[in-house]
Picture 1 (cartoon, helix red, strand yellow):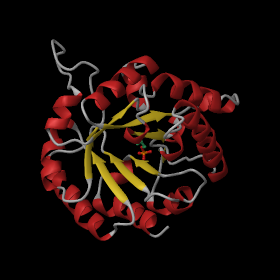
Picture 2 (cartoon, rainbow, N blue to C red; picture 1 turned 45 degrees about the vertical axis):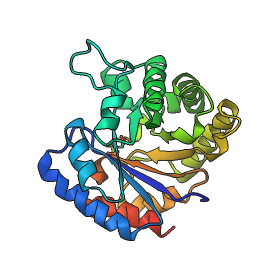
Picture 3 (cartoon, helix red, strand yellow; picture 1 turned 120 degrees about the horizontal axis):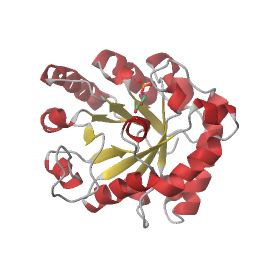
Picture 4 (cartoon, rainbow, N blue to C red; picture 1 turned 180 degrees about the vertical axis):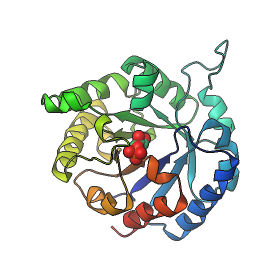
Length: 248
Ligand code: 13P
Protein backbone atom coordinates (compact mmCIF):
# COMPACT_ATOMS: atom_id res chain seq x y z
CA UNK A 1 0.00 0.00 0.00
CA UNK A 2 1.74 3.16 -1.18
CA UNK A 3 -0.28 5.65 0.86
CA UNK A 4 -1.00 5.40 4.57
CA UNK A 5 -4.15 3.37 5.21
CA UNK A 6 -7.10 5.66 5.84
CA UNK A 7 -9.34 4.52 8.68
CA UNK A 8 -12.62 6.43 9.01
CA UNK A 9 -15.17 5.96 11.78
CA UNK A 10 -18.79 6.64 10.84
CA UNK A 11 -20.71 7.12 14.07
CA UNK A 12 -24.06 7.26 12.24
CA UNK A 13 -26.84 8.43 14.60
CA UNK A 14 -24.89 7.60 17.74
CA UNK A 15 -23.28 9.91 20.22
CA UNK A 16 -23.98 12.66 22.68
CA UNK A 17 -21.34 14.84 24.29
CA UNK A 18 -20.47 11.98 26.63
CA UNK A 19 -18.89 10.27 23.63
CA UNK A 20 -16.33 13.05 23.19
CA UNK A 21 -14.17 11.09 25.63
CA UNK A 22 -13.98 8.32 23.03
CA UNK A 23 -13.02 10.82 20.32
CA UNK A 24 -10.31 12.23 22.57
CA UNK A 25 -8.91 8.78 23.31
CA UNK A 26 -8.92 7.89 19.60
CA UNK A 27 -7.15 11.14 18.76
CA UNK A 28 -4.46 10.73 21.41
CA UNK A 29 -3.72 7.16 20.32
CA UNK A 30 -3.74 8.12 16.63
CA UNK A 31 -0.92 10.51 17.44
CA UNK A 32 1.24 7.49 18.27
CA UNK A 33 -0.01 5.40 15.35
CA UNK A 34 1.08 7.76 12.62
CA UNK A 35 1.37 5.01 10.03
CA UNK A 36 -2.41 5.18 9.72
CA UNK A 37 -4.49 8.23 8.82
CA UNK A 38 -7.55 8.42 11.05
CA UNK A 39 -10.82 10.33 10.79
CA UNK A 40 -14.18 10.41 12.52
CA UNK A 41 -17.60 11.36 11.18
CA UNK A 42 -19.73 12.01 14.27
CA UNK A 43 -23.32 13.30 14.09
CA UNK A 44 -23.68 16.98 13.12
CA UNK A 45 -24.20 17.96 16.75
CA UNK A 46 -20.71 16.79 17.71
CA UNK A 47 -18.67 17.98 14.74
CA UNK A 48 -17.50 21.24 16.26
CA UNK A 49 -16.75 19.75 19.66
CA UNK A 50 -14.91 16.79 18.12
CA UNK A 51 -12.92 19.16 15.93
CA UNK A 52 -11.88 21.12 19.02
CA UNK A 53 -10.78 17.92 20.74
CA UNK A 54 -8.84 16.63 17.76
CA UNK A 55 -5.15 17.31 17.44
CA UNK A 56 -4.45 14.81 14.69
CA UNK A 57 -7.57 13.09 13.41
CA UNK A 58 -9.71 14.66 10.72
CA UNK A 59 -13.38 15.33 11.45
CA UNK A 60 -16.14 15.07 8.90
CA UNK A 61 -19.88 14.79 8.40
CA UNK A 62 -22.15 12.01 7.22
CA UNK A 63 -24.17 13.97 4.67
CA UNK A 64 -24.81 17.48 3.37
CA UNK A 65 -27.43 19.33 1.32
CA UNK A 66 -26.47 20.21 -2.28
CA UNK A 67 -27.56 23.86 -1.97
CA UNK A 68 -25.40 26.65 -0.50
CA UNK A 69 -28.23 27.75 1.75
CA UNK A 70 -31.89 28.71 1.68
CA UNK A 71 -35.29 27.46 2.72
CA UNK A 72 -34.39 23.83 3.50
CA UNK A 73 -35.63 23.21 7.01
CA UNK A 74 -33.54 20.70 8.88
CA UNK A 75 -30.76 20.52 6.30
CA UNK A 76 -27.08 21.43 6.57
CA UNK A 77 -24.94 22.90 3.79
CA UNK A 78 -21.36 21.95 2.99
CA UNK A 79 -20.21 25.48 3.89
CA UNK A 80 -21.79 25.11 7.34
CA UNK A 81 -19.92 21.85 7.83
CA UNK A 82 -16.66 23.49 6.89
CA UNK A 83 -17.38 26.35 9.26
CA UNK A 84 -17.94 23.91 12.12
CA UNK A 85 -14.57 22.22 11.58
CA UNK A 86 -15.33 19.43 9.12
CA UNK A 87 -12.76 18.72 6.44
CA UNK A 88 -14.72 16.04 4.60
CA UNK A 89 -18.21 14.67 4.16
CA UNK A 90 -19.51 11.17 3.45
CA UNK A 91 -22.07 11.16 0.63
CA UNK A 92 -24.20 8.38 -0.83
CA UNK A 93 -24.10 6.05 2.16
CA UNK A 94 -26.51 3.18 1.53
CA UNK A 95 -28.50 4.22 4.61
CA UNK A 96 -29.09 7.60 2.91
CA UNK A 97 -29.82 5.99 -0.44
CA UNK A 98 -32.33 3.57 1.14
CA UNK A 99 -33.73 5.69 3.98
CA UNK A 100 -33.97 9.02 2.16
CA UNK A 101 -34.44 7.93 -1.44
CA UNK A 102 -31.15 9.45 -2.62
CA UNK A 103 -30.27 8.44 -6.17
CA UNK A 104 -26.93 8.79 -7.93
CA UNK A 105 -27.77 12.27 -9.24
CA UNK A 106 -28.56 13.50 -5.73
CA UNK A 107 -25.32 12.04 -4.42
CA UNK A 108 -23.34 13.68 -7.20
CA UNK A 109 -24.97 17.06 -6.50
CA UNK A 110 -23.95 16.76 -2.86
CA UNK A 111 -20.40 15.74 -3.78
CA UNK A 112 -20.07 18.69 -6.17
CA UNK A 113 -21.37 21.09 -3.50
CA UNK A 114 -18.99 19.69 -0.90
CA UNK A 115 -15.96 20.12 -3.15
CA UNK A 116 -17.06 23.63 -4.10
CA UNK A 117 -17.19 24.44 -0.37
CA UNK A 118 -13.64 23.17 0.12
CA UNK A 119 -14.42 19.78 1.63
CA UNK A 120 -13.12 16.38 0.59
CA UNK A 121 -15.72 13.69 -0.08
CA UNK A 122 -16.07 10.00 0.66
CA UNK A 123 -18.46 8.65 -1.97
CA UNK A 124 -20.12 5.38 -0.95
CA UNK A 125 -21.17 2.63 -3.34
CA UNK A 126 -22.17 -0.99 -2.86
CA UNK A 127 -24.52 -3.67 -4.08
CA UNK A 128 -27.45 -5.34 -2.31
CA UNK A 129 -27.33 -9.03 -1.60
CA UNK A 130 -29.78 -9.98 -4.37
CA UNK A 131 -27.65 -8.03 -6.85
CA UNK A 132 -24.53 -9.95 -5.82
CA UNK A 133 -26.41 -13.26 -5.97
CA UNK A 134 -27.52 -12.36 -9.49
CA UNK A 135 -23.91 -11.73 -10.53
CA UNK A 136 -24.55 -8.02 -10.98
CA UNK A 137 -22.44 -6.55 -8.19
CA UNK A 138 -19.74 -5.01 -10.42
CA UNK A 139 -22.32 -3.57 -12.83
CA UNK A 140 -24.30 -2.01 -9.98
CA UNK A 141 -21.18 -0.44 -8.48
CA UNK A 142 -19.95 0.79 -11.87
CA UNK A 143 -23.28 2.53 -12.47
CA UNK A 144 -23.20 4.10 -9.01
CA UNK A 145 -19.66 5.38 -9.60
CA UNK A 146 -20.52 6.86 -12.97
CA UNK A 147 -23.59 8.60 -11.58
CA UNK A 148 -22.35 9.66 -8.14
CA UNK A 149 -18.76 10.83 -8.48
CA UNK A 150 -18.16 14.58 -8.57
CA UNK A 151 -17.41 16.30 -11.85
CA UNK A 152 -14.07 17.62 -13.09
CA UNK A 153 -10.48 16.65 -12.34
CA UNK A 154 -11.10 16.59 -8.61
CA UNK A 155 -9.57 13.20 -7.83
CA UNK A 156 -7.40 14.54 -5.03
CA UNK A 157 -10.56 15.49 -3.12
CA UNK A 158 -12.20 12.09 -3.59
CA UNK A 159 -12.18 8.87 -1.60
CA UNK A 160 -14.45 5.97 -2.59
CA UNK A 161 -15.94 3.59 -0.02
CA UNK A 162 -17.11 0.20 -1.23
CA UNK A 163 -19.74 -0.97 1.23
CA UNK A 164 -21.77 -4.02 0.21
CA UNK A 165 -25.19 -3.30 1.73
CA UNK A 166 -25.54 -6.87 3.03
CA UNK A 167 -22.27 -6.59 4.98
CA UNK A 168 -23.23 -3.45 6.92
CA UNK A 169 -23.91 -4.18 10.57
CA UNK A 170 -24.41 -7.89 9.89
CA UNK A 171 -21.11 -9.41 10.91
CA UNK A 172 -20.81 -10.82 7.37
CA UNK A 173 -18.15 -9.76 4.89
CA UNK A 174 -17.30 -10.77 1.34
CA UNK A 175 -14.27 -13.02 0.96
CA UNK A 176 -10.95 -11.22 0.70
CA UNK A 177 -10.82 -12.35 -2.95
CA UNK A 178 -14.23 -10.81 -3.64
CA UNK A 179 -13.20 -7.58 -1.94
CA UNK A 180 -10.00 -7.42 -3.99
CA UNK A 181 -11.87 -8.17 -7.24
CA UNK A 182 -14.39 -5.41 -6.60
CA UNK A 183 -11.68 -2.93 -5.61
CA UNK A 184 -9.78 -3.70 -8.83
CA UNK A 185 -12.97 -3.13 -10.81
CA UNK A 186 -13.51 0.18 -9.00
CA UNK A 187 -9.92 1.22 -9.73
CA UNK A 188 -10.47 0.59 -13.45
CA UNK A 189 -13.55 2.85 -13.37
CA UNK A 190 -11.75 5.55 -11.43
CA UNK A 191 -8.86 5.76 -13.86
CA UNK A 192 -11.37 6.04 -16.71
CA UNK A 193 -13.40 8.76 -14.97
CA UNK A 194 -10.38 10.72 -13.70
CA UNK A 195 -7.54 10.17 -16.20
CA UNK A 196 -5.15 12.43 -14.28
CA UNK A 197 -5.70 11.33 -10.68
CA UNK A 198 -7.88 8.23 -10.63
CA UNK A 199 -4.96 5.92 -9.93
CA UNK A 200 -4.31 7.68 -6.60
CA UNK A 201 -7.85 7.72 -5.20
CA UNK A 202 -8.13 5.68 -2.04
CA UNK A 203 -10.74 2.94 -2.10
CA UNK A 204 -11.96 2.04 1.39
CA UNK A 205 -13.78 -1.15 2.26
CA UNK A 206 -16.74 -0.88 4.68
CA UNK A 207 -19.09 -3.44 6.20
CA UNK A 208 -18.49 -5.33 9.45
CA UNK A 209 -14.82 -4.37 9.75
CA UNK A 210 -13.58 -5.33 13.22
CA UNK A 211 -10.20 -5.60 14.91
CA UNK A 212 -10.02 -9.30 14.12
CA UNK A 213 -10.66 -9.08 10.36
CA UNK A 214 -9.09 -5.67 9.66
CA UNK A 215 -5.57 -6.86 8.85
CA UNK A 216 -6.58 -9.36 6.17
CA UNK A 217 -9.06 -6.95 4.57
CA UNK A 218 -6.58 -4.06 4.60
CA UNK A 219 -3.97 -6.25 2.94
CA UNK A 220 -6.26 -7.04 0.01
CA UNK A 221 -5.36 -5.65 -3.41
CA UNK A 222 -6.46 -2.02 -3.93
CA UNK A 223 -7.86 -1.64 -0.40
CA UNK A 224 -6.67 1.75 0.87
CA UNK A 225 -8.41 1.74 4.22
CA UNK A 226 -11.70 1.08 5.96
CA UNK A 227 -14.97 2.86 6.68
CA UNK A 228 -16.06 1.54 10.05
CA UNK A 229 -19.48 1.77 11.68
CA UNK A 230 -20.19 -0.17 14.85
CA UNK A 231 -16.57 -0.85 15.74
CA UNK A 232 -15.74 2.88 15.67
CA UNK A 233 -18.05 3.72 18.57
CA UNK A 234 -15.58 3.03 21.33
CA UNK A 235 -11.91 3.93 21.39
CA UNK A 236 -11.08 0.38 22.44
CA UNK A 237 -12.67 -1.34 19.44
CA UNK A 238 -11.67 1.36 16.93
CA UNK A 239 -8.07 1.35 18.11
CA UNK A 240 -7.88 -2.37 17.41
CA UNK A 241 -8.50 -1.56 13.76
CA UNK A 242 -6.13 1.42 13.75
CA UNK A 243 -3.36 -0.71 15.25
CA UNK A 244 -3.93 -3.35 12.55
CA UNK A 245 -3.66 -0.60 9.92
CA UNK A 246 -0.53 0.89 11.46
CA UNK A 247 1.16 -2.52 11.55
CA UNK A 248 0.55 -3.42 7.90
P1 13P B 1 -20.53 -1.51 10.24
O1 13P B 1 -19.04 -1.38 10.41
O2 13P B 1 -21.29 -1.33 11.52
O3 13P B 1 -20.89 -2.75 9.49
O4 13P B 1 -20.99 -0.27 9.31
C1 13P B 1 -20.32 -0.03 8.15
C2 13P B 1 -20.78 1.28 7.62
O5 13P B 1 -21.90 1.44 7.17
C3 13P B 1 -19.82 2.41 7.68
O6 13P B 1 -20.26 3.48 6.93
